[in-house]
Length: 117
Image (cartoon, rainbow, N blue to C red):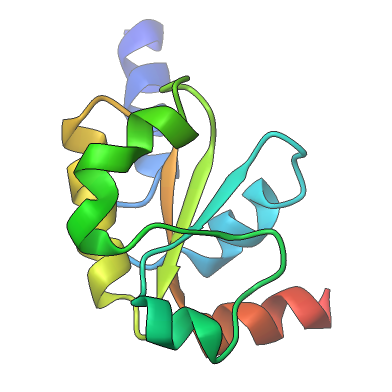
């Protein structure tokens, strides 16, 4: 019974795939091994990006993620313009076996939250 309770608590502590978890993203970004991925277009990225982020457009994520994040246990934080593309990217990465994927939401909101820390 205790083991089952611990498993249920572990699952409830993580965000449901697709949900924006800005608090989780901010916490993960405190770790030096966290990979920050911007899934916006090259044009959007050129207009401004969060320092330290790697741009991998959502359409090329499947093909490029293994080269950027070969360790599927590495924490990955995703963001886009509004949180919609990063939600789809989170679902994709989880389907590919990545275990610590967080949807950080929209660029402006995440950037401001990082600055406020």
